Amino acid sequence: MENCECCNKTKKRSEEEYKSLINRLNRIEGQIRGIKGMLERDAYCTDIIVQVTAANAALNAFNKQLLSTHIRTCVAEDIKAGKNETLDDLLLTLQKLMK
Image 1: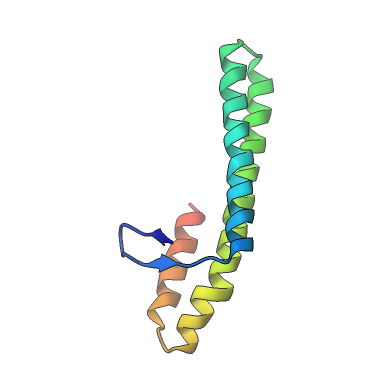
Image 2 (image 1 turned 135 degrees about the horizontal axis):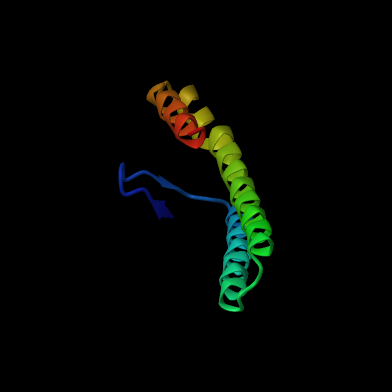
């Protein structure tokens, strides 16, 4: 279970969701290591920039997957339970993502 330091909320993820998210993060971690290696090997600037763009896209895809699951589970369940403050939290999160 993952703890959020700011609010002490947790989310129990299914084995499938957990594995999918971990796999994405492992690939992203590999991309970052690859970028570091390119820098260490004095790779050409634009080649590194292209790889950084790919890593950013991978992080965005991770965020989209996590946000989608969050809306379908945590947000939907809380709204059904009458916890409308969760909607305010979602809106604040979306504002942060759109900076």
